Image 1 (spheres, rainbow, N blue to C red):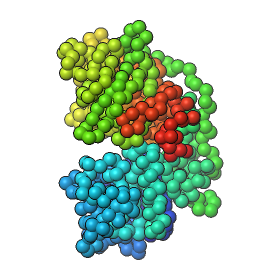
Image 2: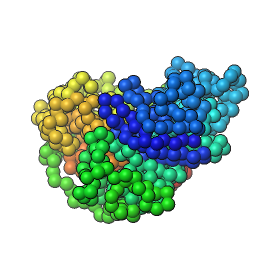
Image 3: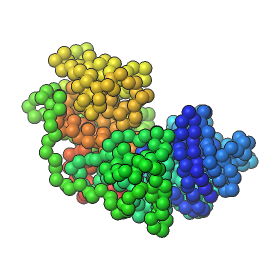
Image 4: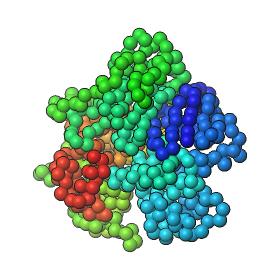
Length: 582
C-alpha cells in the first residue's frame, strides 16, 4: 500500500532526512518518537499536504502512484481514495459550519443518500442517524473523532494515515476508537500508518513499529519485540520514561536534552549528545539502519538488543533539597480543615446535567486525582472552583472561605482567592501571551502576589528547572515542555495554596511528560501546595495522586487511595477504565 525510499522534507533546512517505510495491505505500522522528530511532516508528505515553503524529495508510492513531484490534479485523485489522513484534533478536519453528514457526503463519489451516510456513520459505531444533522460543536470529543474517521474512510482508501488520533481522548474512548479502527481495517483489508507519541498504544495495536528521531528512523521491528528488547538507546530511553500504571515509581526519568535539527546531525549518530553509551564511532559517521535479526533494524553501532532500562525500585526517595520557596508555606486553612471542600455541587446546561451533586476535598499539601471520561464533569468542576462559572447549587470552601459565588465576594476577598488557587492547563498557550517575553509574563504574575510573597523571575525559573537566560525568550522560541514549565512557574508566582492541573501533560511526549510530572511531584512535596490533578491517564494519576476520585456523568462513583482504586476497583465503571489500559 505504501513504500517510501529516501524521503526528505526540505525548506530552508532539512527537516526529514532519508525515511524508508513500507505498509502492506491489512498491516498496521506505528511511527513513534518525540515532538520534533519529524513524524507529522512525514505524514503530510505522504499525502502531498506539506506547509507552504517545504518540499518533499525521494520517493513516496501509494498504491503504485508516485506522490513526490505529482501535480495537484493527480494528488486530488489519490487523496481520500487511495490514501486518507486522520488528524489528532477533529476540529482541524471538520468545518464547524457544516453538519456531520455533509462532511461524509463531500468525500463520497456521486450523489449521496441519507441511507448511505447513515451506513457510514454506523460503520464507526454511530447508530443514531440524527447525528448526521448535527454540527461538530454539538458532539462530544469521542463522537467528533468518530465522525472525522467516517469522513476519512468515506472514499474507501487503501491506506489510512492516522496522526495522533487518540491523544486527547480518555482511556475508554481511546480503547473504543482503536478497537473500531482495527475492525474497519480488518473488514476492508486497509493498511494503517499510526503516528503517535503514546508508546503503549503503538506497541499494543501495531504489527511493526518504526522509531523516529531527528528526521530519521533509528529502529524498526515487530512492536512486541521492540517493547521487550529495544535495540537502540533512544527506544530504551523512551520506554524508561513511561509512567507505570501498575505501581508508583520512585522517580520519573526523562531523556536529558532535546531533539536536534536533522541537518545539525546529518553526518553523525543523531542521538549521540543525549546517549549515555556514546563512543568515538558514534560521531565519526552516520550509522546506517542495519539488520540485527528477522524484521529487526537498528541505527546503533552497539549490539544493544535487550538492554532496556530496568524498572526502578518501588522505594520512596527521600525529600528533595528544599527549593527557593520551601521555607514559606502557602497560606491555607486553620484548625485542620481541608484546603478545598466541595459539597453537593450541581450544574446544568439546559437539559444536560454536568454535575449532579459532587462532593470531594483536598487537604493542604495533598494531591487528589480526578479521573473520568469526556463529559463526566471534570472540567465543569474545575471551572467552578476557579470561579469561571457559578454552580446552580452546592458549596465550595477554599482555605475556610466560601467561594461558591465569586461575584458575591468583596474585592479584597476576590483578590485573596485569586492568590489561593491557580491553574495549569493542557495547552500552555492558553496561559502565555505570545507577544510577551517569559520574564515579562512571570513578572506580571508575581506582581499579583501579596507584597511579602513576591518572587523574582530568576527564582521562578530556577524553581521549574529553567536557566535565568530564558527570561528574554518568547513562548514561540521554547519547546512544548519548556512552555509548560513556564506556565507552571506563572501559576506558582502568587504562591497559591491550591493548584488545579487540568490535563497538564496530555499533549506532551513521554520523555517531556516524565520531566514535567517529576517537577509537579516536587512542587507538591517540597512546597506544600495542594493539587487537584485532572487527567484521563491512569498511569499518570498513579504517579502523582495520593487519593483518586472517579467521576461518571456528573457523579462521584468511587473514591479512595489511588492504590486501592486502581488495584481493587469497586465500581464497574472504574474496572472498565482500568481494563482499558492493562
